[in-house]
Structure formats: C-alpha cells, structure tokens
Length: 375
Image (cartoon, rainbow, N blue to C red):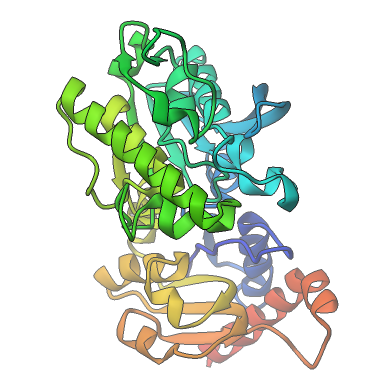
C-alpha cells in the first residue's frame, strides 16, 4: 500500500516533518510493508521554509540584516536542495513579532531587511525565489526592500528617504538605475492569501495598520502616502497597482514586489504544492493523510489540508485528515475531498499536555485509523 503523508505543522507541538514521521510510525505498526511518501506541507506562512527545506534536503542560511526598526539582527531563509531556489519568510526580517507591542509604529518600520534577504539569495546564484509575506510589521509599500536592492527613493531635494511608511509621503522621484540587474533573470513567486488592495477603506493601512500600532490618525497618513507611491509608480513605470488584489498584503509589500520585481502573487498552499511536487507524488497512492493543529470552517479558505485534499480528489484518492482540535463548520469539507477528519487527543487533557504529547497522540490515532482500514 502507498500512503502519501502531507500534513502542515501542528503549531507549538510538532513541525510538518515530525507530524509526517509520527503518521508513518502509526502506519507501519499496522502495514509494515507500506510505502510512506513524506511531503511536509505549509500554506506559505510560518513553517514554509522549514517544510520545503526538509522536503528537498536543502539548507537554512543565516545572515545579518536590518530588522523592522532598523536594528541589526540575524535572519534566515531556505536554500532548496537543488541549489537554485530560495524560500524567504519576510517575517524573519521584517515581522511584527520582532517588535515589542509598545514599540510598534508603521510610520517607522521598514522592509529593508527583507530586501537584504533577497539580495543574499541572489548572491547564492538562485534562479527562483518564493517569498511568504505574512506577519509583517510594515506599511511602507515595499520601499525599504527596494532600497536594499538598489532603488533610490528621493525627496524634493534629491535626498534619499528615511525608512518607514511615514517618510514615504515625501517621495518625489523613483530612480531605478541602481536596481540589482540579476533580478531580471529570477522568477519570484509570492505567497499571498489576502485580496486587499493597496489603498482605500479595505487597503493595507486601514485594515492591517491598527494591528501594527497605527492610530486612526496614522492610518490616514499611511494611506495618503501609499496613494502617492502608487501614483508615482503608475506615472514613472506604467504599472497601476493601487486596486490590484493582494497589493495591500504586508503593508503594500505585495504591490512593491509586483511593480518592481515582476513577482506573481499566488495562494500560499498552491505554491507549496507546486514547489514540493505534491501532485506527482500522490499519483498511485491508496490514501493521503494530512492535517494540522486545528481544522474548522476556515480550512476551506486555502488552508493546507484543503489544498492537499483538492489535489487528491483529482485522482479519486481517499483523504483522511488529523487535527489536535476539530472546530465548528467542518461539514462542507466532506464535499471537497475529505473522507474523514480525526481528532488525535486520546482523553481530556490540558493544552500544555496536548502540545507536549502531540507526536505520540498522532501516531496512535494514525495506527487506529489504519486498523480500521485493514478490516
């Protein structure tokens, strides 16, 4: 029998790879001769680098960058096993969790460190970059990233802009002459699961600014500055990104990546499916096992198990999903490729105990499902 094991991480309990290994352990107790194909998954957010690096026997690269407030820090990205693809989570360089709540201020925060990670990957000779842009602390439209890659953003006096969404309001000239020439030969995919435009009532500043520390007054300033940025982009390079779906992701980083780096915005799980070669791996499988920490009604909107089930459904392969918690609204999943959704807890427990015993619980739940399959 062939089992494809394609879980996401069970947050704070086990990585996607360890979850797949726990599933394998349970399967082999019942089917000792089974073929288990391990495909650690993610949805483009936290854990994407780890999943793809472990899947391809790649490596984690660490380098010094400027953090969201301009401080020096060590960030990391992944280099996949073939040596030609880099995977970057922008949050490791420019993420909200890097700043204490009382210090969060999107007028000041910058994506410069994310640009430094891209430049470091170019130095490694990559031809493809996947960038996950969730969890940002920024609202600068990707301006800092562009500066790190050689773009000059000048005010009316010809001086370089300071970092942050605030100084962006002084922008008068975008000079692309110094943009790293290597970018023209690199394919850039962006894992982006939000559809917000760059500006307006549903744009980057209004919707995401407050969670990054923006007051209502700051939101007005930030939106006005991004509007100026979008107008200059349209005027100087001929790209209209203000209303584009996903342009508002990561405080407008989505817009900057599309406008200046010719990046493609795609759903995160779809990109991970592509980069792992999941579709080819599920062919000929008897069962696909997937799962993550929580499965509920939101799973249908692009979460990892849904993406996995969609691929398996194309080949009429049964899908069994495992979860630490099964929330409300899972019933529609049974119409979208899920054959069963199994909770892994074996009894009443504290959250701390559940997280600590996640691998053992998942292995045991998988074993019991296989015992039913063996019947």
